[in-house]
Image (cartoon, rainbow, N blue to C red; front, side, top):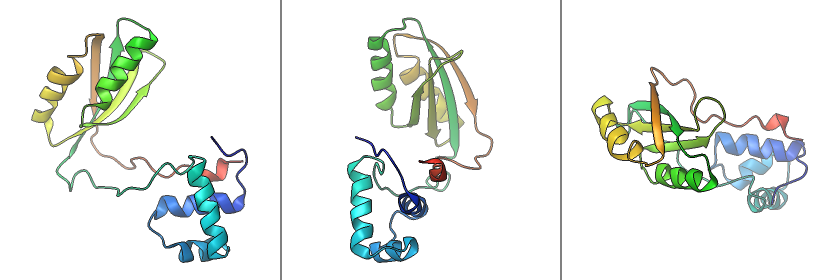
Length: 159
């Protein structure tokens, strides 16, 4: 289910929750100029519609000991729904993989992984990614510096 329309209040709620998902409802209500009960109803509606997909702590990868980010472009040899499902399931089962996309262009999948260091990349590549039977090519790029990772969505563009 999705919401058909987002008004200025919905956008304000989403903007604030992306900055601080732990903001108390009374503070959120004050910030968006609603009563606490009306604000809570709006938040619950956004959650029910799946627009707010969840809440979690955002970790600093480097401070958590995961200072290496790798981007993997995968090509597969058999383009089918079954192959896509198998590759997706395998990639999503690898703890180091934090994002995965089915893409167009020269690659078929694009995955992002976080690792402690460069030596830990080899087992990720050899034991996990290249072990996927349909994967025929992998190109890797390493992040030198990350300026923004999964920043807030541009809710002002919602209508």
